[in-house]
Amino acid sequence: MDELKGITVELDKEVQKAKGNMFASKLIAPLRLVLVWMNGVNQKLAELEQRGGGHF
Image (cartoon, rainbow, N blue to C red; front, top):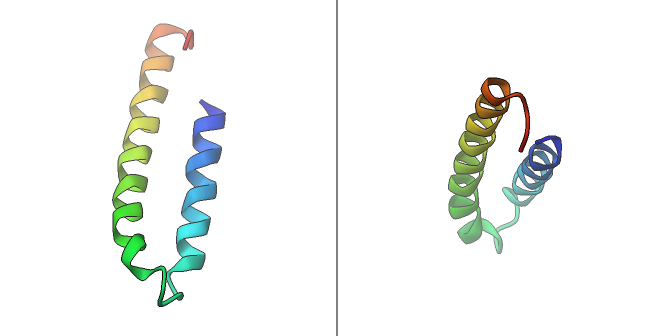
């Protein structure tokens, strides 16, 4: 789970950096949606790990 969270954080940092880049702006909106989805998935996985004893 920590690895997934790390990937999400790293991607978020890169999206934040690219916000100011005019050429990358068309990719930012879809990537932000992917980040929202990834954060939701990470949260659900964390909940499942807590309920099931962390055997994922």
